Length: 224
Figure (cartoon, rainbow, N blue to C red):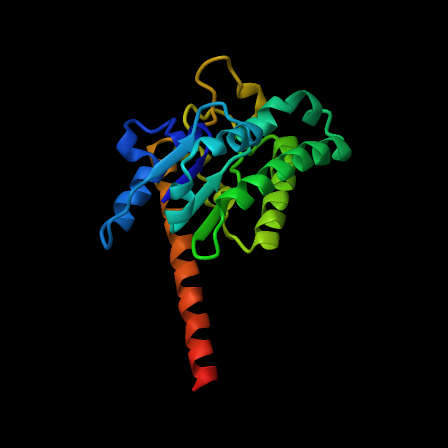
């Protein structure tokens, strides 16, 4: 299993490494088979920085990973805040387009015909800030576009977190952008948030497995 991302995938917000969503997912999957985990993620990484790091990953990990997860983009939006906060649709689109080109390259490097690749949308830690909602929705529309083009499976983290931000987001306050601080920002998942991410990724993998089995059954009936 290969987990790609930034500080969230790295495990920020979890009170111990065992409670991060990639490790929770690995343990669950390991109930039925041996599962090794490689996490390619660091705090602060944008999609560009993640993309630039991928040549460091041994080729055998890409070739042997039966499951790949990707959750990236929060830092793209934070670093683009001066432009995004103008609220101009064309500016928001430009930030999303730059991220899209990086994410496309990430997918092309890590995807294989035989693996199950799940890409997550971003949750919005500022649900009561209308512009943040609009920006996050535009970014997530881009993620869904990439997923459709490459036939990836989508875990809608934005939907999983909606209405649960006070429990799922560390240091959550009012859900407004004014809550941003130099320290203890309301951005990373709590233990409960990591649990929700793990459950969402796992359920998406289960749906992907069921879909493959259904298609296999149809092919077998057609050949009979």
